[in-house]
Image 1: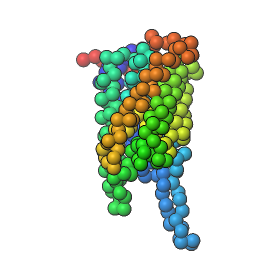
Image 2: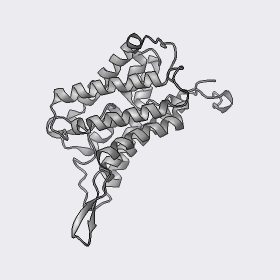
Image 3: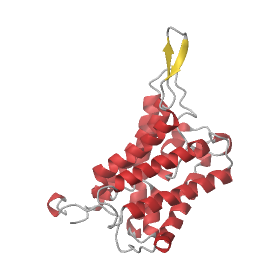
Image 4: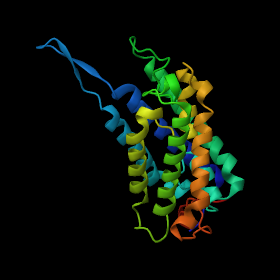
Length: 263
């Protein structure tokens, strides 16, 4: 087994983050609330997927791409995850900046795609409606900055605990993407009303600038809280669980014959 070259891994991270943002935020933008006319009654019928559907969409994006490219890059798709696993000493710090840049670029491309598609409907108002994260007046439930920071930090920490545990060599083989995807689904079920759920700075950045409406000014919170939560989990996982796997990188591994030849 060998680790694919860095450019291949960065491409996989950008691709996975694109799918996470396009699939997750796209479900919130286009499908969460969809009113279809009911001709006999003269009233509209809600055919949208709601909070549950959006939560499942985010979980499914991570699960599907973890199976698709996890063996290439490790399937982080999230700067907080990359930093957290580096704190846990399961990913090299030297590669963290490149991974974070790839994730942000992939997310921004997805945000651009969502913005372009949304503008294709004459009655759709893009500003304020691209699933941006927020606190205070921009929180779906009106939650304060402190409440949002605490929730985002706790939920990101548990997301990283799930990732570190599910990718342990003693965990059931082949099921890590399912556990991680369902973990992200649960996180969204908890926190969509609180902050629209970030736990991922790349996801937040991806739509903030296209969304406008105060989202860019609040973006800092959705970098700080997830990174703090992930760092705490990365630093404490081996202490809490008693399982020390700090010598095992969460990176992609492929068979030698499938890896590109070094140039």
